[in-house]
Length: 164
Image (cartoon, rainbow, N blue to C red; front, side, top):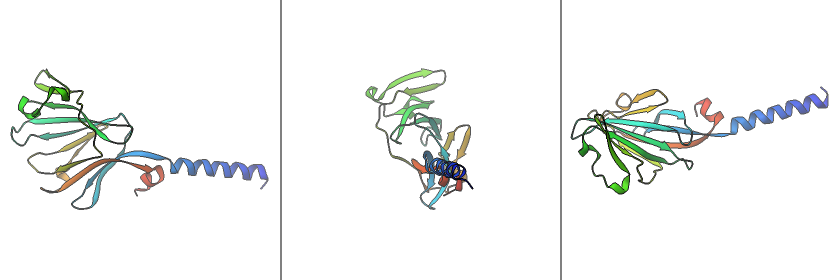
């Protein structure tokens, strides 16, 4: 094998290794109680996902829209609810409250971003995560009282595609 071909193959190999080592943002949903990952999906900064649930007191649907920030933190951006008391406590310093049709919507929420979201799963609340057209009902993967953690991690592409 001549030196040009060998050099070319070495360069291609290095490029492939660099691509496989490149870190990507992953939204990871982990059942902490069982110590297993329920769901993981690539997600980009500024991309959104929702968590919908049944309000435990009013028994009405609530949808929270979260946005991924550049620093991998998760920030609540909007909250949709049918009864105004479901959004309580609401301080007008927290954002803007509007009514659209049957929904009250808190927009431009100014609450601090979080490293992780923790949810205690109950069949009453029926938590569902929605991302890129995928709906993940957490009660299908968790028993009542189990704790779920949602966070964004950086993982090399190779580890993600190999399931590690």
